Length: 174
Image: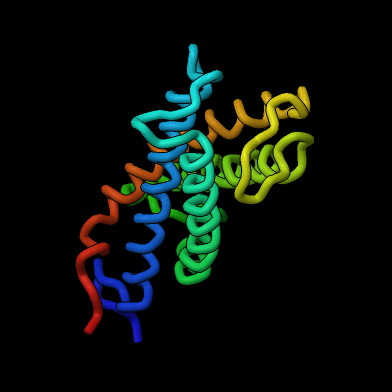
């Protein structure tokens, strides 16, 4: 049974809200890491807002993993619409498929570059531990830059995506 126009099933609604919460946690902790530890004198800082760098990093990692997993579930639940957007079959006068495709691409680049910097490069492999800056690969910096830029682009497009679908986040099929 299809949900009413503008509404979604309870299962979809739960996934949507969980994805939104996880993404907000990932983006907000990512912004603290970027602004508090990666720019200016932050590279040598131990804490931001009274919370250690390692705590921010671990919360960011966990929230990002939850975001990625829930994002896959969300994409599966909305696979028909996703395929239409990716195929460019969005009708003129409705949603902009181009912005959606850019959002999907930016999100995938953010996830991929974050995983490479976290798990694959020297000095970074500590699933819930500190990054060893002394051992960090020189290749890590461009991956982190790609992660930051694609994440910021994703954030802007995600806000647009959620605002355009805000009614669906509160309407539910009974």
